[in-house]
Amino acid sequence: MLNTIFVGFYDMINKICKLPLVLEPQPEGGYTITCPLIPNLITEVDSVDEISTNVSDALEALIEGSQDLGQPLPEILRPQVVEYLFGLKP
Image 1 (cartoon, rainbow, N blue to C red):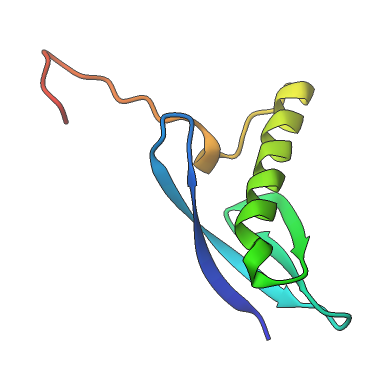
Image 2: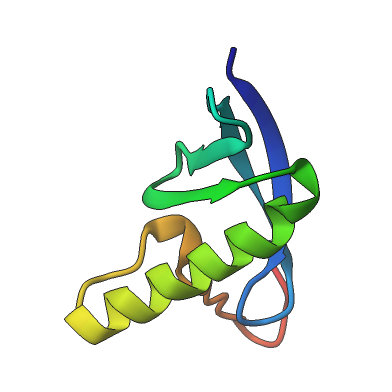
């Protein structure tokens, strides 16, 4: 049985973002975690208490790897730039 949860993380401008995570129970115990919005994000945990830490570590490694290889980040991880026209906020 697959479970989907949402986890929040801080992006580069300290804004909280939510990602859907899919937890797949493993026969030996623990879970494999993936994210449908970020195909290369995959990690494992022994318990649900480790989800936030392991996902954060996996995201950090994914971002560093993309930068090292000169590949673009998945759109959901790209910093959003908002332009202000005439001093008015959108």
